[in-house]
Amino acid sequence: MAPALRDGDVLLVRLRAKPVPGAVVLVSWPSRPGQLSVKRAVREEPGGWVVHGDNPLATTDSRQLGPARVHGVFGWRLWPRPGRLSA
Image (cartoon, rainbow, N blue to C red):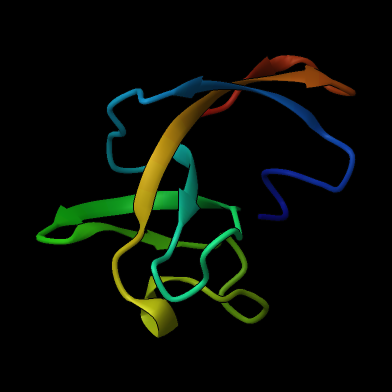
C-alpha cells in the first residue's frame, strides 16, 4: 500500500464498518483463506468489493483474485505519523 502506508505503521481499524470507494480496508478472498490484506476499496459488486493496491506494479488484488470480503475500514494511523487516512 505504499506510498499511503509503510511497514511498521500502526493503524486503527473499525471492524464491520461500511466501506466507501477510496477507503483503506482490511480484506480477505475465498481463494486465500486465512490471509488478510490491506487494500483500497474501488466499488461494490455482487460477491464483494473490488479492491486495488496503491502500487499496481507490486500488488495482488481483485484484478487477479476477484471481489474481496471487507472485514473493516481503517480510519487513522496511530504511529509513526499520526493522522487520518484519506478516502
